[in-house]
Every structure is written in structure tokens, then in C-alpha cells.
Amino acid sequence: MARSSGFLDTILTSPSTERYRVGISLLFLLGIWLTVGAFSQGMPNSMLLMAAAVIGGYMAINIGANDVANNVGPAVGSGALSLGAAVVLAAIFESSGALIAGGDVVSTIKGGIIDPSSLGSGQAFVWLMTAALLAGALWLNLATWMGAPVSTTHSIVGGVLGAGIAAGGWGIADWAVMGKIAASWVISPVLGGALAALFLLMIKKTVLYRKDVVPAARTFVPWLVAVMAWAFGTYLMVKGVKKIVKVDFLEASLVGLAAAAIVFFAVRAMVSRRAATMENSPSGVSALFTWPLIFAAALLSFAHGANDVANAIGPLAAINDALSSGAVVTSASIPLWVMMVGALGLAVGLMLFGPRLIKTVGSEITELDKTRAFCVALSAALTVILASQLGLPVSSTHIAIGGVFGVGFLREYLKSNYATQLHKIMEHHDPEEQKRLKPFLDDFRNASVEEMESLLKQAKKEKQVPLSKSERKRLKKIYREEMVKRSHLVRIAAAWIITVPASGIMAAILFFTLRGLLI
Image 1: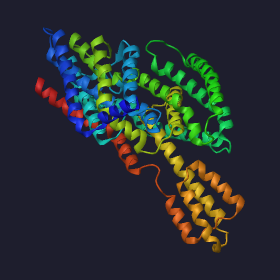
Image 2: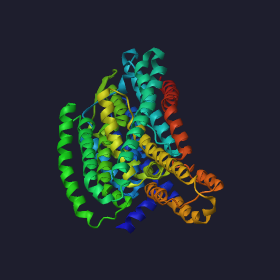
Image 3: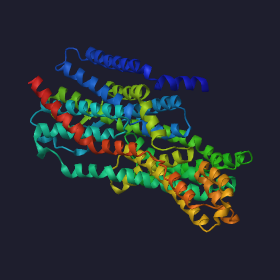
Image 4: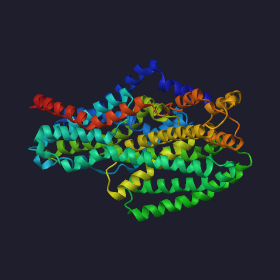
């Protein structure tokens, strides 16, 4: 099994297979063209509908390639899932979420950012939605190529805004709504990062920093996983199946509480069984989070498929209804073929082009183990729940990436803090004892954050490890090592900021182009 998974990982990431991946995606889009052409033959504007369907499929591919990485990246980076297994799991649950819980009706104007009554005709509305859809897809494609995970919702919002302004002027936009969306660029990553760092610090203080981690794990890990079960049970009811089952927050919370109770007793029994053979170390505790991470990746993918498939099929459904009625539509029914375009496109995009962004999120921003990945996943669910109850605009992409950065910056802070403690402990020792310093420094340099605390306590207790001034400077330099790659932070933040204007400008250009070609 491991060999076949490794082979699949190689196929998914090998540069030599790039042309095959592009070829398969083109065949998928050709299949959409031919299928839609077959059943729309003889209908008015059938060519425009076929083109819109292909663009919708292209958008779905790019959503799968870019956005899904946030759901499974931490699980892959921590080793809970192989890349191949994560791609297969996410493809199944993304498409299932889209087909089962994607809904029957979709709002055509995402978030109410423009007033469709300002448009002169149904024809202009079709051009607007086509331009928005293509612009959002092109921007996502570019962001994926750059290795920057961005919000697909913001991509389509920017497209609708830009094309809307081109069609109806600046007054067509609701700038108050756009202000809330801009606020989410800060709110989402800050909330996600703060919660992820807080949970990681709590796990360190209650379990990983204890001398005997096994008894601590038996006490606290079941509660931690139960909190995750409540969060995901509630999250699934609030966001994942809201188009199937209508529940208020209290009812959703009670469903989450029932899931938490079941999970608590199951995990407590599992930890008790494993306690006798479990390694008394942070890595032993980390292994307990493997299955919670796998379930988190599956549930996040399902909820994402149910919600964000609308970014691809919403404009397509709107175009389909507008072409049939000849009028502007504010909500559109979703035919099965439109839903299939979105669901299959998500899966195709994820399997063909998703691994690049999965690796970026999972391992290139900061090093993730299962404990850190658990905190990122838990933060993602809790932040969405908290924001939805407070009425705050947030992006699931920004939340997940903020969580990854949050745990990375916490690791930097802790290492820097421990190095400072070491300086204070050593600065009063006799320099003549420097010959006894080297073994300790070697151990300290190679230690994990958890092991560093143990070494510091030993040094403080025994008072036998001296440190010279030059060696203190060397130690300071070592612990200024970045545990979060700033280049990724700058690139991703820049991509977030320009997503709406970039897709908006492209959509405006495409709208004028389409109008010029079709008038």
C-alpha cells in the first residue's frame, strides 16, 4: 500500500506529467462542450450556453486546484495522510458535498455586491456573468501557478464587481458590502491564526511540556478531540448541509454536542488502551491526532464542496436561466448537468493540479506535525462558527492559511523565549567552565521546542553549563532562525490584497470584449 501511495504521489507531482495533466483537463472541457451542445441543439443562444458551460468547468477546475489545498494541506504536511490519499479523499468528499448538499437554487449575485436592476437587459446580464466567471477562473489559474492559495469567493466577487461596473457604472456597486469583504482580509487570518496558536499553546502547557506526557494525554486529549467533534458537528450543520436541513445555531450546537459526547468516550477508551505502549514523548502524543485529522480533512472538504461549488455553478446557472427567460435573474435553479460540471470540475482540478498548493500549505510555510495540524483544523471550524454568529465576513481560505502562520509564529516565539531564558541562566557562570558547554549546546541546538524546556530545567537545576559572551552571540544568531518563511507570507498576502481588483479589472476588460464581439 505504501509503495502504491508513493507511486501515486510521484505521478501527481512530477513535472514530466504536466502536459498530460493539461491534456486531461482540456479533454474534460471538450466533453462539457460536446455534452451541452448535444442537449441544447436547436435552442436559442446554444453556442453562448456551451461557451459558458466550458468556462464554468474551467472555474471549477481552478477551485479544485487552489482552494481545496486548505482543507487537506495540514493533514498531508503532518504525515497523517499521504499526498495521494489526501487527493483521493478530498476529491470524493468535495464532489459529494457539491452533489448532495450544493442545493437546488443559488444566488446569482454573490453577496449582493451589485444591484442587478441597474442593468438594462438580460443580454447585458449574461455578458456580465460570463466575464465574471472567466475572470475569476483566470485569476485563480494565475494564483495557483504562483503557488499562492487565494479565496475563490473573492475571485468571483471581484469578477462580478468589475464586470458590473463596466456594465452599469460605479453606482451599481454596494460599497458597504465591499468594505466588509475588504475587512475580511484582516479579520479572517488574524482570527484563524490567533485561535490556532492559542490551542497549540494550550496543548503544550497541558500535555507536551509535562514530564510524564502519557498520563497528561489520557486526561486532556479526549477533551481536545471532543471539542473538535463539537466544532465540526456544528460546522457541518451550519455550513455543510444548510441547503438540505434548516437549523438554527442552538440546534446545530446540540448536534455537535451529541457528536462530542460519543467521540469523547471513544477517544478516552482508545488512549487508555494505547497508554501502556505509547512513547512517553511529544511524538507519541502527536500520533493520537492522526484519525481526527483525517476526519477533519474529509468534513472540511465536504463542507467546502457544498458551499464553494456555487462560485463555479452560480454564474453558470444564472446564464442558463437568463438565456431561457431573456431577463435578469437574482436567483437561479440548478439543473443536474450544471451541478455535475461543478462537482466533477472540482475533483478533476484537485487531482490534476491540487498537489502543488497542498504541499505549499502543508509543508512550505512552516513545519507541521500532527499536533500543529490539529490546531489549524480546529481553528478553521471554530473561526467560521464564531464569525457566522457575530456577522463577520470571513474567508475559509484566509482562516486556514492564517492558522498555519499562527502556529509557525508561535514556534518562533517559544524558541526565542527559551533562548532568552538560557542566556539569563548562564550569564552568571564562571567562564573557565566553557569546556563543559559544548555537549549541552549541541543537544540544545538539535532539540525540539518541547525538549528545550527539559534541557533548560536541567541546566537551571544543576547550574553546571557555562556560556561565554561569544557563544551567547552565536546562540542568539541560531535562534533567530525563521520557522515561518517570510517569502511565502509576502507572496500570499500580496495575492490576497490584489485578488478582488485583479479579477475585477480582467472582468471589465472581458465584458467590453464580449459586448464588442456580440453586438
